[in-house]
Length: 104
Image 1 (tube, rainbow, N blue to C red):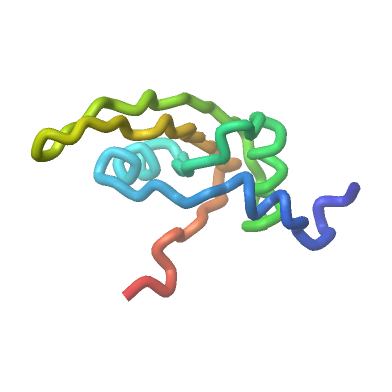
Image 2: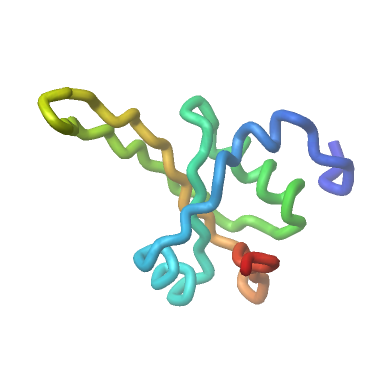
């Protein structure tokens, strides 16, 4: 498959949303890294392919982690946040991606 073909539906399902926090912004400035929340079953090669197809950038490296949900309670009700899988994606040197473009 050529990386020039249109993205498939599965590529949109792999990348759930970008994570934009103070910590991820500092990491992005320091080493050309981006952070995304990804589907729980997504593999590193799937994440890499989805980034390249959807955003047209070259990915050098993908690191993933699963953040375990923590217990929470409010007014006597107990609950638990769900687990979240995060991917830290390093772009090839010289490439960038502005995730905040168009946000007002």
